[in-house]
Length: 254
Picture 1 (cartoon, rainbow, N blue to C red):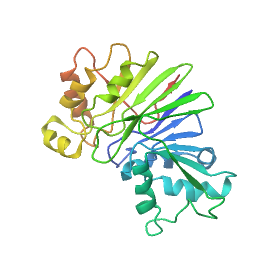
Picture 2: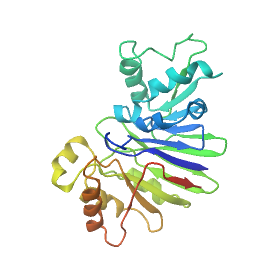
Picture 3: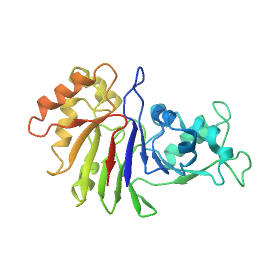
Picture 4: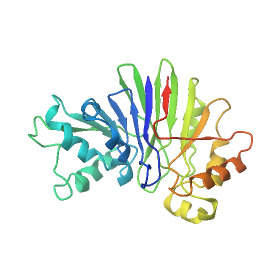
């Protein structure tokens, strides 16, 4: 299983791309601006999109993906998420006001997209690859994902603040190789982190200490312009287990 980081920034500008992760060539986890760097051929191969939550930096390219390759495909793209996330797409993004309803276009019987409810804690297996949804703690209903194959597992928190269930599931995963955890703001923005239910370095470090030894930890969703300072603060809190900074284009082979 090949996992490629298409985008991992907390914002845009220069080379920054928002959250999107490609699993092999047919599964997308979140649909941030990094999806726009894929070729037309690569876009057409995406059969499944798993969403962590409904915020724009994680779904913004989904309408363009469907508009660009929907007519080239012979089956709909399946969009997997919690009911609350799918309802946000139905009621706002694909409402006909912001974007056409591709769950009914070109016809309700043969649309470009179908919604698939994946409850928090649910699991989907696609050609031997397991994607387990893990509830996390964000300002809207949100999940992380545990992605596994015969070569091991990788966990992605999505957007979250302090959470216990995520680490409980990870500590029970015997083949866990990598963990990607968000760290959006500086410690000086602790109150903003709490209000927005994101992480700053001190909060992320406290949660990372809940993780068993072994897996490599990577930080994601850093705000543009503060990346180096955030990483220095994280390292200061975790001198014996310094996480790596996740980078666009990075590939994990499992």
